[in-house]
Amino acid sequence: MENILYYVTSRGANEQNLFDDERDYRTYLELLNKSKEENNFKLFAFTLLPNHLHLLIELKAGANISEIMQNLNTLYTKYYNSRYKKKGAVFHQRYKATYVEKGPNLLGLTRYIHLNAQKLNLVSEPKDYHYSSYPLYTEISADGKLRTLDLQDEIREVLGRLKGKAYQKFVAEVPSCEMKTLHKALHRGGFLGSEEFVERIKVEIHARSQEGRKEEQIKEEFKEEIKEEIKEEVKV
Image (cartoon, rainbow, N blue to C red; front, side, top):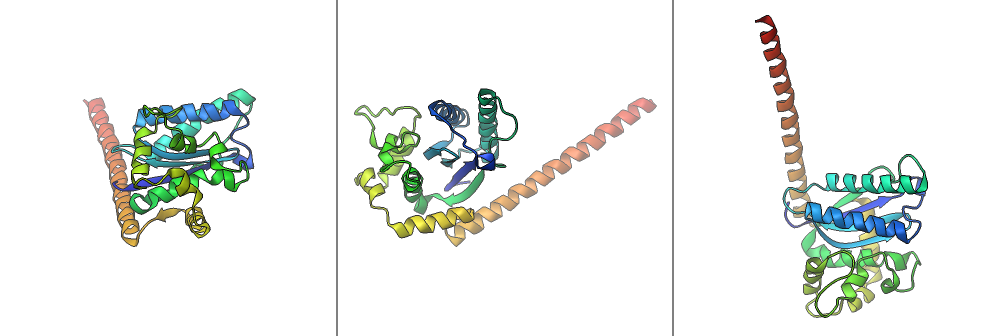
């Protein structure tokens, strides 16, 4: 589906921490980077906080957000339980995703995600938080190489929308009303965009759902045909 971003959040089960030290943060980022390479999606922004995380993803054709997040969370759960000698769920149920209209919301959502650590008083300024993509937006070297995750293309796309304005200034000048409005909309979940966008997504989701049902029906019919063939072979 075109012009769609997925704003994804995951929380720790029973309000427990997902990340207890640098090794945990680093491991999740390594898994995220591997998933990005394997599934060829765009990652415009991320922030890993002690008990939850935020991701802003755009999928390429053929990719599936459910499969990506289920895979990612399963791999991290195995790592976490192995390291801390625990069993059971690490994440609270499944992830939560909001369908976002990319055009009018890309810039604002990267800013929203990058300000979370400051909002929670973990740091005084977003540049001081090491487990988000904000430093990648502000510490690009002269030859264009980035540290850790490779988000060069995504960052160029975002900065291109600022028309020369510094990203640091853009983040610092966020209107408080915008943050509150975004927070309410994202907390509500579901969709973020124009009425036309929401209607289009609902239609496409319904169409996919119908296709899925047809596939299941075909599989069941195929199973029945195989059973009948086996019966005929037995008779012979």
